[in-house]
Length: 329
Image (cartoon, rainbow, N blue to C red; front, side, top):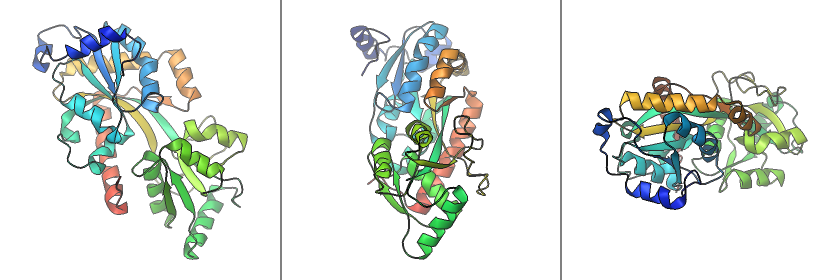
């Protein structure tokens, strides 16, 4: 799907012509010399899609060429990733989410290696998750919740939690939480965050670790009970909620993030220009205000910092996948 940043016909013609310039030629010609394909790993309306559409016009203006947005959802983001990994036109970028760290551990038989196929450019955004319970659960604090979960597990009546699906960010966040808590709970996966939240609202499960976008307003309204956030710092919108680290889980942090990648081998001058254009777009007050409304924080990190962060995330998610035997089958 081509976003309306360019007329559909022109966007398709540009995408079809995108094999004309091999990557090494970038060093010999001004870059960018044509519109840039921005391949998004998730459907319209998702977090990374929202961020990309917010900053796309400003990035295009800074780069001197527009971004042609193209959603390629499916298979934990690997369909979009494969398209970019195989691109050799020098004008294709991947706008991916935190599933980038999970996909190589969950999807078998990939024709490319995630750790070698991409050049990380910048982290665009960070979104905290919130541990929420149904209001009827007899707890008021995260400490009381931890004690209840431990008692229920010891009695053979473990709490049940909803996730956005096997291998989703909310699933991994809960696995890491339960490892640190030291007790077990029953996992109930759903097809997305919205049905997971609906199950909690219906009291079909007892808790959920969901994005700020899906849970913060419900917690503010009292329809769900917010107990803690997964970031190292408290959320300005919910200042009374402690972090899980403050509740005794030293070092606990889990966020949903979005970022930009180029195919491996992209020249440093290209990745630097893209990073600078993204940072400039993220610095616009209208963009920052909109991100704040949906529970996101703009980042705009350097390629080196983002590369280190992605490597750390891949290692953490790989360990959790092995230890909890997480699959998407």
